Image 1 (spheres, rainbow, N blue to C red):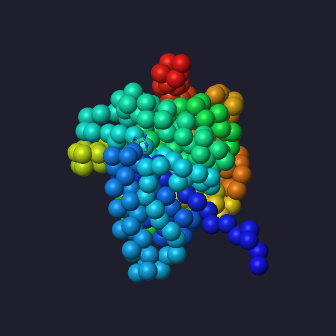
Image 2: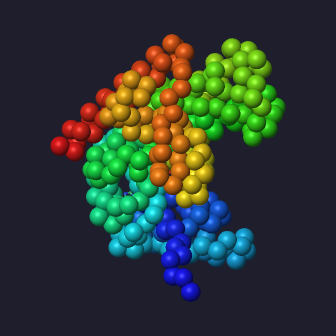
Amino acid sequence: MTHHIHRPKIALVGSGQIGGNLALLLGQKQLGDIFLLDIPDLEGIAKGKALDIAQMTPIQDFDVKLAGTSRWEDVRGADVVVITAGRPRKPGMSRDELLDVNVKIMKDVAANVKTYCPDAFTVVISNPLDAMVYAFYKITGFGHHQVVGMAGVLDSGRFRYFVAEKLGVSVEDVNAFVLGGHGDDMVPIVPYCSVGGIPLAQLMKQEEIDQIVDRTRKAGGEIVALYKTGSAYYSPAAAAVQMVESYLRDKKRVLPAAAWLQGEYGLKEMFVGVPVIIGAHGIERVLQVELSAADQEALKKSAARVKELCGEVDKRLA
Ligand code: APR
């Protein structure tokens, strides 16, 4: 008998709305055994969600183990860590306004991930996204292939949905890329949006495209305004699952994500949404694509805002 067969271990830090949906979706895809972690006061939520989903495994035929905990020891050696620890937005709040409280949380979380899961591929979801993934990277000192922020897959998913809805076509046939920071100045790259391979501009009037770009930028806020008690959770969870799957199954998917930049797109020493390849080595490559002058300018502007927030993070980590 061989004894080297390894079931991937996935640690979900934060067992709130996104954490619970991550457990469900990762479980249904049988990507690994799942550990929901939360603070001691909410250990019951972590354990309850794990047990609830475990009890659906025989019904839906997915063979994974699920557990809830507040002890980092239990997630020791995780292969993948997904971080949603932090406060979500409330109506009228920007993602940036979460910085103070969420950096404090990230200090605790990142130190623990560093100690207990030093080899994990880590996906950060907590907002303000680009600043939180930066804080995580700075605190852990992890390799840049190992750390990524989830935003672009979600923002592109929103864009794709709006286009498909408007044109009355399958969402499967709509391709899109949204780059830049995960804020209202994100940059949907319209020339690379296509429907069944046909450039979007051939199928839609500029005015309609502009409306979709605008709605995409504000899509997170649209949901916050509806929920009133928090922010989106199904779609962010699904977006992170796509990234985790590409890593664990070495799919090498081309996805927009917040990656550490070292001069690509003229940007340096920050995480900003760009097209990357995710495979068994983590962030295997940052793809540099040609951008129009207007898109370049918009990306620069979005990145400048991210840089400012990283400065705020640096002050809080000093
Ligand atoms: N360690 C572990 N878990 C923590 C910690 C910590 N130090 N601090 C907070 N948490 C947990 C909270 O107890 C809560 O259960 O993180 C969870 C966050 O869950 P929700 O409040 O339901 O928020 P959610 O909707 O999942 O969003 C989480 O992702 O999209 C972003 O803006 C959003 O920053 C927010 C994050």
